[in-house]
Length: 99
Image (tube, rainbow, N blue to C red; front, top):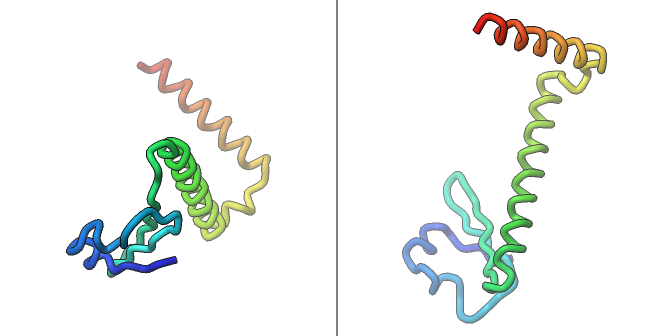
């Protein structure tokens, strides 16, 4: 995978990517962030966007799972989960009656 500094990409634009079509992803690197750049033929645009959205969802789920483990929530029993759901539903029902 070719790596391009983000500043070079900002300065050079498409010239920084090199000539012609390449199916190889490019890694744009900045100070605190990195981006993957993938050249996509117009006919494949929707399929690639669907894959990217799916990947973003998986990455978000993994991050949520990591936070749950850090908070110890992965040790919560099903009985506790069900009790919390019942309490939330009961609270929601009471708010509807008040309104």
